[in-house]
Image 1 (cartoon, rainbow over the protein chains, first blue to last red):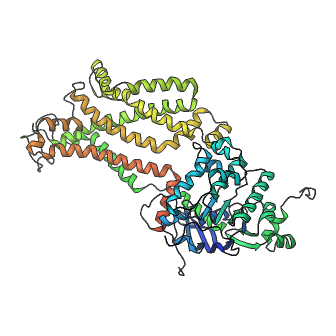
Image 2: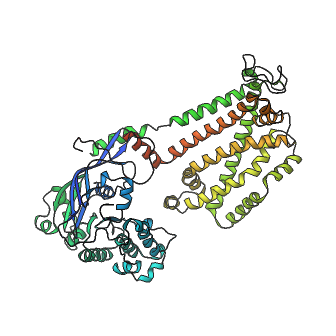
Image 3: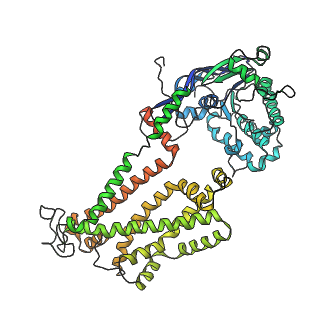
Length: 279
Length: 313
C-alpha cells in the first residue's frame, strides 16, 4: 500500500477528513429507485463535530451508512462522491474498503446491544477489531483494550464482562472505545445516544468532544435531538426530504432561530420548561 | 419525493413475483405426478409382463428400451413413479408435519413439555435406523403403506431436532414477544410468527426427505420386507444392477430411473430456492438491486453498490 492505512491523528486542524459531494442515494423498488438522499454536500474537518439533524426518514441515517458503504439492499448509491481523507470511497475495491473500514473511519450505531456479540466478552471484541486489521498496518502501536476502556470512562476490569452485563450507557461507551481502537480519523455516530436518558447523553457527548480535542478525529453525528446538537456540535446541517435545507452553527442558530422554515419549526418545537404553552 | 415513493410502492406491492425457477420446478413435478396417475393409459406395455426380447436399446417400439428380463423401461418408469413419488411425498409430508409439531411445540412451550418431547426425539434419534426399519417391517403386513409408516416413524426425529433448535432461537426474538404482548394465543404465535420464519429450513428438509424416502423404499423392497414385485424407480435400479446392466452396456436400464430420481430432487430444489427467496424479504431486496444494476448474483458481503446516473463520473 502506498499510503499508510492509519494516519496518525495530526493536529492540522483544517484537514478535511470527509468530503461528500452531491451525494445521491436511493432505495430500489419494483419499478425504479425511491430517492432518499438527493444531492447532499457535506464536509467534516479533523477535530470537528458536524451534526446532521432532521426528522425520521429525511435521509440522515442513509448518509451515515453510505460513508462506509454499509447501506444494505435495496440501498444503492446513484451519484456523487464521498472522499475519505481525499480517497474516493465509491471507487474503492472490496479489499481496499475492508482495510479502510474501522482503520480510517469507524461507526457507532444507535443500539450497541445488537452490534455487540452477546457470546464474547466486551474486551475480547475490542481486541478482535485490532487483530482483524493487524496485518494491514504492520507494527503500528495500539492502545490496549484496558486503555481504550479507561479513555471512555469504563473501569478496565469491566472488559471481562459480557455485553448484557453492562448498562445502556456503558455499552455505548464500549462501542465508542471500539471505534477508537484503530485511531480512525473519522467516527460516524448514528444516533449514538438516542436510547439513553438526557444526563447520560450529555456525559457521552462531552466525553466525545474531549477525546476529539485530545486525538483530533472528526465526528459526523446523526441525531434528531436539536438541544443536544446546539450544545456540542461545531456545525449543524438540517435535512429534510433528502436535502440539506440549512447549514449553520449553534451560535448562528441561537441568533437567527433558523433561516429555513423547516429549521425554524424544528427550533420552535424544542420544549423549554416553563415556556411551554398548552396546545 | 413523498409522492413518487408512494406511487412506486403501491404499484410494486401488487406484483408479488414468483421466480421462474419455481414455476419450472412446480410444472415438472406436476407433470410427473400426472404421468404417474395416468400410467395405465400412457404406458405402452404392462409393466410386469415381459414385453419383448431382453436388453433392447431404445427404439420406436420400446422408446426407452427393455430390461435384461424384457420388461419395457418406459412402462416401468411410469408405473414406478406411482410408488416412488407416492412414498416420497407421503413420507416427506408426514415427517415434516410431525417434526414441526413436536419440535416447535417443544421449543415454544419449554419446561417439562420440552423435556418430554426432547427425550422422545432423542430416543428415536439414537435408535439405529435400518435395524428398526427391518424389525418394524417384518411385523407389519407388506405393502406401500407399511413402508410409508416405517419410514415416517424413523424419519421424523431429525426434523424435530432441526426445527426445535431453529424455533428456540426464534422464540426469543422481539417480534414474538410483541405478538405475545398483543394477546396472541400460543398456537397463533407458533403458526403465524415462528413457523413462517422457518420456511426455508422446512423446504430444505422436505427435499431431503423425498430423496431419502425414494431410495429407502427401494432398499426395503429388496431386504424382502416389502413386496419384491413392486415396481418403483428404486427397484428398477436394483434389477438393473442384479441383471448386470452395466456390464452388458444396457445404459438405458439404469440411466432413466436414475434420471427420474435426480430430476425429482432437482425440481424440488428449484422450489426450495424459490421458497428461500420469497420467504425472505431481505433476499428479495437483494434481487431487486441485482436487477436494477443489471448484474448477476454478486457476493453477499456488505458493500453498498454504486450506480452512476450522472455523466460527470
